[in-house]
Image: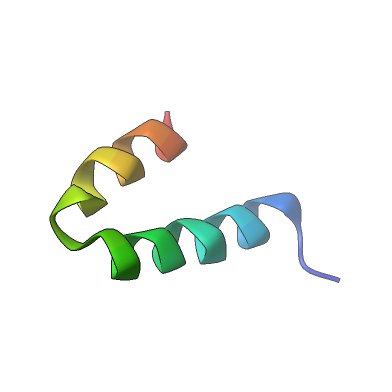
Length: 32
């Protein structure tokens, strides 16, 4: 069963793929 962090990482990666140039901002938000 995936951990919360794993799920968040996958979801964040999916957002990054969809958002493109907004990737770095979302990564910073979710890694804080």
